[in-house]
Image (cartoon, rainbow, N blue to C red; front, side):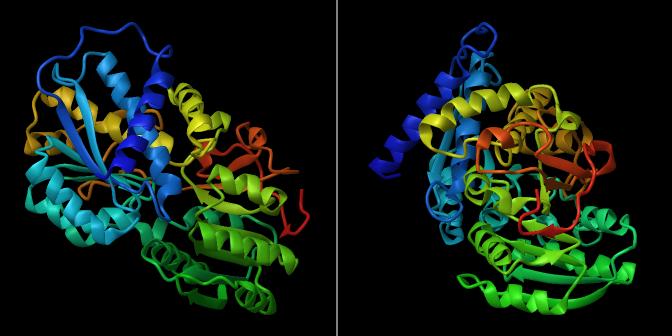
Length: 423
């Protein structure tokens, strides 16, 4: 790890510790003995850093919490992490070093499918438990019995990922007849639109436009014009942050309108892009993992977000923390609870515990299936409503990201149509 990276990570660690102080109960007996080391790769620079750095801040808060309660197995927890620069090619070497040289006791993942997948062969070869963060279908090919994923998509992506979007659409009167689909040529995007295609055919919707675009695309106006010419009732797009901004701006400039527009666009979940896009987001129906609605007030989540935001303000990371931080904290809670129940570092016993038991987290109770995915998928579809500007305080309050699906978390009603100027 170079000096600049060490300095930056040390600063993040100190800030996280300061945020956690004052929000915790009185310290338990101080942990002692050799540290219990948890290792991972994290994207602190490059294209994934916008979500990697908030995840790191959250992990630091969790570590401070655990150590204030006496550590794990009576030992202080130490996080050992290296910047993968958002480059999957760096990841295998990092995990090899963590396990073989640093001799970490446990491993977890950084953010995103693109970082988790290249770590899997190394972790599997060492037969270690691997608790991952926001991967999509990574274990479908590996079938590794010690993999556990903190992500709401579940195991049956094809039939469930886009189900919320389709259920919302098919409840409209009259029912929609056609759909346009566009996606980045990348793993997550292609998996999500595969679900949209499958369900569209099941529901008898005509697919009037279906295109993928390559990474690095900067001009999205041809895609928007093509969709506009097809005149679909529904538009389902799956994209990564830079693409999402370009697509939404192109849609606004073209005054694109549809009965429903959105899908699995990654970007509108991030505070900086919420502020940047403002009213352009109105009436968009999009995939998400958490929203600050009354229906999702799980124990501990508000306290976590308050503490996280104190660090985020100073560190210039995502200032709302509504996307990655609740899941990143839950990732570490799962590991903590398994270690406490098992009472030792035994990879096989930890995996057996994780398959058998429920975990209580800041995003609610979780259980894992045989592939290490949630037994009950929880893909949220939210609609932005009443956005007048880029004031982030508005997005932190209920009523701006209204949950439309799943029904048990619904907090509002669909507004139609999507189009420039909707408020």
